[in-house]
Image (tube, rainbow, N blue to C red):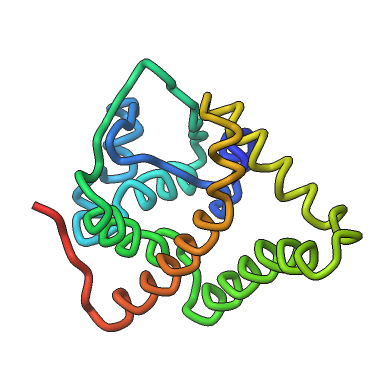
Length: 178
């Protein structure tokens, strides 16, 4: 989600929150009924942000490199379980819409790579994907070359996690850490 749209638009489709660090005015928190209203939600941070926006308030998501740190998971399995818990439920999409968005991701992500492998003349299809990775790496102060090399792995893990997410949600197999 483009972070500037989170702030500039009142559309709930452009809402994001990271539960490890949320700053909110007490009056706003009380107005939206805080955690009392979202205590049964698995992605409570996203719902809190959604209700804040629905109440007519703005939210802002910012990069805080070096200001706040948090270790969400200790290993790959915990990370897979955690992201599988929140990808689908955090999207707030119907199962059909979510599956179509996952298929769309597969097409938009992997088609340029496959076309380039088939014929180098399709490099122009790969350039937007590579530029997106470079821009993300720069904004997150990450190693650009490493992110480009790991791009296919990132895509595969995103699809696996996305598919696993709807499976665990629809079959009541959500795993909580701790």
